[in-house]
Image (cartoon, rainbow, N blue to C red):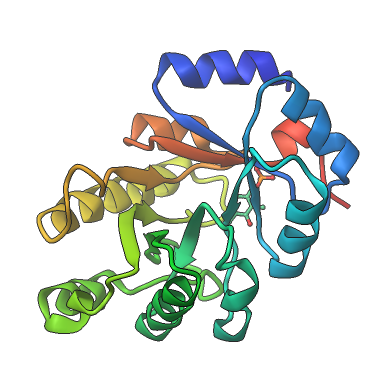
Length: 216
Ligand SMILES: *Cc1c(COP(=O)(O)O)cnc(C)c1O
């Protein structure tokens, strides 16, 4: 899909675009950069670091894929938003690495909304218990910007809609525990389901193949 067209559609609905550039070469990313796109998402740490080093420094890099604790240190100096904070131990490590770099790292709480076992994320009820406990008071180098989730990979649009609605409700329920001026992002929707996601309240979509073409 043409970038300009998608961008116009999203701007009209006040939805931000993370262009998911995983597996795509720097040349393809630069094409979008030249059209004005500044936010790119990658799901692997090594690829993210390599692209960060090679590309213009006014790009905001988002980590959208599962993050291992031992790799946080590589992205901590520069990452703009981590979408995939999905367990308390990982949050502690991100907080620690942020402190070492003398910065505050913005994170989204990834919540499991899909029925597949393969999708990462907090169990919502467990997360709710955690945020009610003192566990979340120790994070002086994190800022909590909202939630992220991925729907089940299925043709059943009603199921996808229900899962996205659940995430929007979870965001609402969690809001009272965070700074509501900051805890605003609902990151949901990819190439195949972003329109449903927006109807359900998404304000940040992560789109790859629709912009860059299918991945091998
Ligand atoms: C790859 C990926 C996307 C984008 O997927 P497309 O279907 O290519 O738009 C979005 N979110 C995450 C977490 C991904 O890994």
